Image (tube, rainbow, N blue to C red; front, side):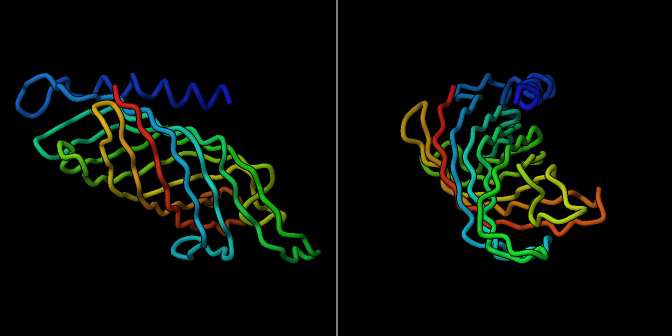
Length: 206
């Protein structure tokens, strides 16, 4: 837990050194640059675009931080990172080779490397695109608990949605992300699982 916090929050000052202190016109930005967000999401079904495991559901909840690095008249790009204390994969009943009842596998994830692009951010409602990369540690090997599978995997997501400003310092986000979990062939067994996550978030802007 402490290691994950250090990874996430130490990354922000490092990226800030590469960020512009003004917008494309050279004027100091008047808008908030920091975004502290609580989010939750649910994947009702698993796909097989990259991973091969099916019949899985996924629940996630956590905190995200974004720092706006570059801004133009209609587009901005932010560094982003996430801390996910609840990353739960819902497993069906299965034979491995013995029968294992349906159950939830609890995980903890951190994604210290991510970016968010906002489009039309000066409007009350605007679109965004985001991607995040990191690791997830789970209470048992996922997505299948078999010999050679691992409880420490890589996590990558790509998605987007709309953001709604509810005030000068608050916003709501609604969106979808394709979230892939696998061990990246660091072991001989790497089935991987693809999650279709629909999520909502509440942001405090500073």
